[in-house]
Structures are given as C-alpha cells and as structure tokens.
Image 1 (cartoon, helix red, strand yellow):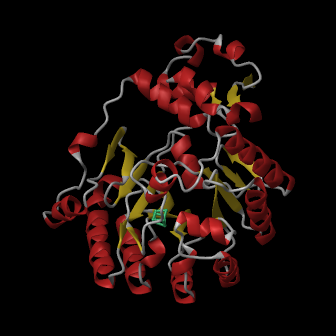
Image 2: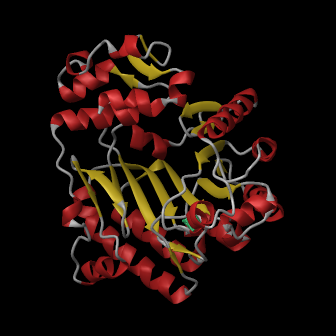
Length: 382
Ligand code: SF4
C-alpha cells in the first residue's frame, strides 16, 4: 500500500576509532566541539527541509552512523527539538538510535528516553573477546553484557543487537555461543550480518595480503547463517527479513520501509533518500556538506540523483521486497505500476526456481531455502 508517511534517517558520521572491517562513512573523532557544530549543521538542514515535508507524518526516525551515542546529551536534546519542530513526527513513531556499548552512559540513556527514543540498537557483533579484538571493536564481552542490561533497566522495551558471522577463523562454536548468549539476554530484535571484507580496510589487508587469518569459506558462512536462524526461530524470533529476526510485532518499522518501497529522507553527509519519487544522496565529503549548509543550500549531491526507468523501478520494488519473509503482493505491484508483474517478468521463473520462490494468495515470496540463495533468485528480476 502506498502511504503518505515518511521515514527519516539522520547520519552521525563519527566514531571513537575505526573498526578494522569498516568502510562505512564515518570518521574517528572525539571532539565535543566538532559534535556540537555538526549537530548545528543538522538542525539547519532539518529546518531547510521542513517545508517540503509538511503534511507528511514521520512514522519512523533512525539515527544511525557512525556512532550516534557519541553525541553528548545536551546536543542530542537540541537535535531532537529541531527534529520535532521541523517535521510532523507521529505520536506513535518508531524512533531508533544506533549505539556502541563503549559510549553508552546512564546520562545518555536518560536523555534518549526523555526525547522519545523508543528503540535502541546496540552494535555488539560478538560475545567472544578474541573475535572482538580481531574486529577492532572497543568493547569486550563483559561491557556488552553490562550495557545491554543497563539499557533494559533504564526502561527500553525495544532493543536490537547486531551480531556478525563469517569472521576470519571464527569457529562455528564461537558463533553459536554468541547467538545463544544473545538469546539469553532477550533483546526484542536480533540482526545478523555476514562480514564483508572490503578492500582498503585493515582486516582485508590482514586476510588477503599479510595472510594472518584465513577467510571464511562460503559454505561455512552459509552454515553459520542457517544454524543461527534455526536457534533464533526455536527461541521464538521470527525471521522476517534475510538479515533480521524479531519477536512477533517487534519488526523494525524503519527497516521495513526500505524494503517496502516507501519514502524516506536522509539527513547528514552521504545520507541516501527516496523522496518525492527521486533517489539521491547528500554530499559525502564533510566540507562540501558543511559549505552547502553555511550557504543555506540543500546539501544534495547533484551527481547522485538517479534516473531510473519504470522497468528499473519495478526491479527495485521486487528486489527489495523479496528480502521480506512476506515477499511482495502482486496486487500492490499492479496498483503502483499499473501492470501485472507476470506480464513484465517471465512466469517460468517460478518453475526455474521451484522450491526457492513461491506464489500463494497473490503473494510472491522466497522460501527458507530461497532466502539462502536470494541473490541468484532476485537476479531474475533486475
Ligand atoms: S562503530 Fe560502526 S561505523 Fe564506527 S567504525 Fe565501527 S563499524 Fe564503522
């Protein structure tokens, strides 16, 4: 169903130090003055976007990064005030902040609750100290446990933890122990990511150039995924998207927006948007972003504006929608694109990928086996 609701993504591009596998848009920075000036820039950007978002209820806000939990409480409150002043944030909006255990404090948690943050996502990655060191994370297992409990005791009832597998020389036992400990702590949502070794990162160099660690074979990576999903399902988590599991009713509204062809506006350097029917990104370079803000210009990188054909948009709709357990509705496809899906795509796809993709009650979806080899099935729709 097409909705007038809008999601907001706010990017906080600072981290205390870079993790060894990270190629996200984030810079090492510990200066509170820089954080303050950056929040001021974000507030100006929010104000400048207010008019075009008028009349569109914001039903999800995701403050991601980087490490948003580095922002001091006073600046955080100021940012949230501007957010509410500039946008029509719905009363029941899902408002998530991404955090790292190392920068969570009681004072910050109190500020989050006071500002209406109702979902907190914690970058745990592993409960194994050697693995955490290999990844270059700043916390250890004890701190991870302690901070998850602190978050819960503070009153948060919607907590996500991110966990990572396929880490060089991570054993199946270590990985499944991490999953079991995650389940034991009882967060409402657990996301699982397979480590991607990105060129240019220190971990890539250690694996492919210095040969300190062996990469995880694809077959083991897939087995880790299966075993983890099986344990999570046994524990009552619903596998609602390829990389995400949640207690029933605790699926992330913001994540679902990305996969349901709904619009969102990104704020901050490098933030992506799907807004007003267009896809674009803000300037990635901090100085370009700040220059635009100073000149009171919208910081969108003109080069990033995508011009997709109707057929390409259909591909995006199907490709992202099939990530969800429920898949896509053929009726919704017809409503949006005014054409039947199987007049655009070959119905023989269903036969070619029997057992991997199903059509039932006008819903097209990947089976469990299909989710596992999702790229090869989804490639049919691009
Ligand atoms: S905390 Fe996240 S964004 Fe920051 S360096 Fe580590 S992986 Fe990258």
